[in-house]
Image 1 (cartoon, one colour):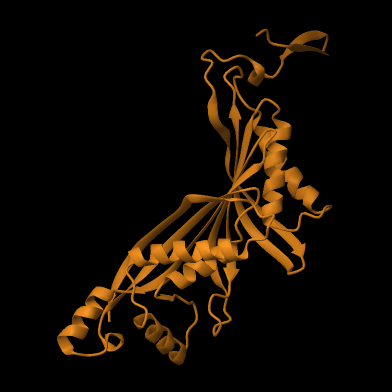
Image 2 (image 1 turned 135 degrees about the vertical axis):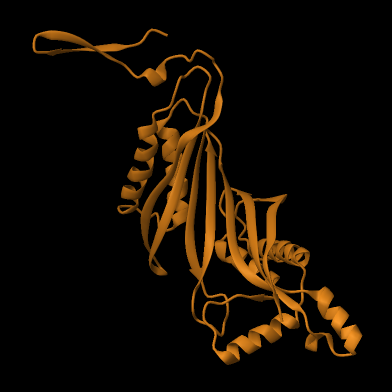
Length: 288
């Protein structure tokens, strides 16, 4: 490909300014699946029926690069992000998910050679996960939205939070050995982190559904603020509900499926069966 030059005059001299080198053909004509920027941090302010919400968001943006182009225009990645955030102030984009989808479409608009664009966002949201405790708990949330030219969008919605598990093996052994009710038996507790990721077409899975599924999958949730009575009741509830981390995975899958099948409105995006991803890890062991 012949580079395009523009001509300018300065102090009587003629200088040739090269055109976009990104438009040249590469030496090796290989397509690249993802090219972009990572770690763009922005504060997103949203006003809707729930009031004013503020999110500190870390963003990654990508497009695919065909084999006949040497590079992408990285500055246009940042432009797509900033212009969408500025547009949000003047339009009706009243959710973080709507803003991310608009960013993704802006990437395709600014990169006409690309067939696919992707936005990944990491943030923290706060939920009241215990009716008796009004202190909101932090939940790590990840959104990935991808769009293909001339087609719809795909979503990946993920959460990660910690809860408590009580070992049913030790509890059953102590109950048998001492002849006591299993709920009154000794065991050990573990702090456990559960990650849930659900892929959908058309629109994202509501985050609060995933949080509900995760919280109810544990033996009991972990809470930031507990008085003595509340701590006692939480521990008693956990010992009445002993679970391995394998049980947590199964219950999270079941509860998430129940929410999807029972509460989805008719026009909600279709659910990819078998593409719900779960990960559960025991973080520590405490003897009780």
